Length: 239
Image (tube, rainbow, N blue to C red; front, side, top):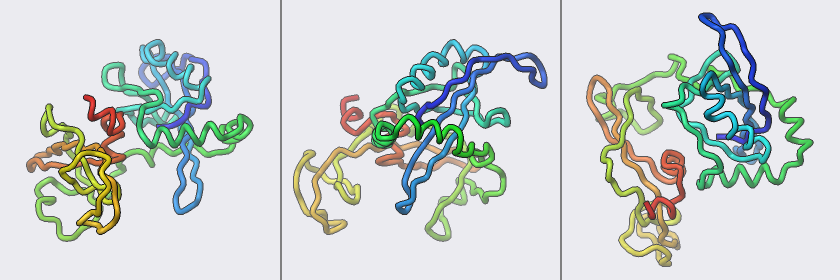
């Protein structure tokens, strides 16, 4: 996800196997970590039939500083990232999710001259930082049935919805996300976190991760669920 700040003209290049047409767009992303602003820049390249299919959308996004979420990207050594194919890659412009709204608010507060400086001065993200490199320790699904301790784990497998018609939202605490059986907008004291809270819509999506050892359910909530579903809790509840 990022703001499109530059669109290059399409050009023809000679690849290892043939001659190809490519068009490159520069994205900028911004977030604060421990009160420190972090800016990242990445080039996204369109190839062949992707240029007329998606290129005009990204050119318009560059003209309006729109937030673009690109799904199913393939990391390459040419300009860091390329959209894989017309059928498997997709774009969402200004999606109604909190992260996109925050990014749009930030870019609207930035002067055009600062964006120009970012285009010139912010280093490009290395493609190796975007993909699994093989140096991380991965676990099989079977090993995750009884993990030895709590923490972050990497699992490689196929991802799919556990149920196609599952409910994608619930009513939960505004502080700790615990589920509560009341209507949204009710003031109450949460019995789990012991804080004053307001019951509110929370997004949730339950998925299956499958590898050669079996399958396990994983649950995504709040920001992660919003990014997967490309919608806010209110929009999700209307689906």
